[in-house]
Length: 261
Image (cartoon, rainbow, N blue to C red; front, side):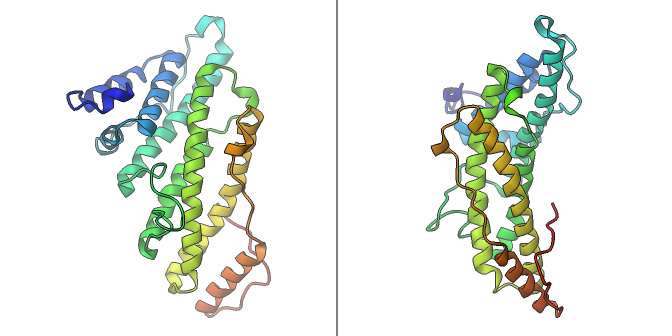
């Protein structure tokens, strides 16, 4: 199917709509596999596939999905997997919305100091882009499973795709935050306020990412594939808050304010 997305004579809309139809079935196995296939094609297929999902306002309306068939006499499994299908569909929708908003896939852009997309992005564009990235990260983390819930090959396949996305998203996110901090002391008051808000949200998401990665490690993902999440010292947040206070003509706070999500 990956090969199909690169064939000029294959209709991407037809392929996407076929998978969307499969995702409207009642069986959790069929629906989950359809979503995994969509996610796989977004990750590894031709970009035309993601472009179509983003531009056509395709939406996996699975917010109320519940498999009542009790596949193979396991009603509890059907119920549990239905929960993860709803969360997974939400993430795939958010991945398409992100692409529609910024016209690129956060998981595929260049990363790093020299030519990383978010590392070199101008301030105004960066402040508009980071909230889009944060929304996609949030939707991924909302999958929120434990190692004990990864009980079958279907959900495991979805989890692995989410893990790979998260590693790339977080690297991109990190690039954006480094860029933000490097520009912070040259920003005007509104930009600095928005940037500080982005940084506080980043700190909260770091904790949630760490929880997700613990699950990944506990199910056997190689430690070498899991990034280090060493936090910056709290004195950095103090310095950022003090600078914003000076821009606003306020007395600097005495210690780090509690972060808000």
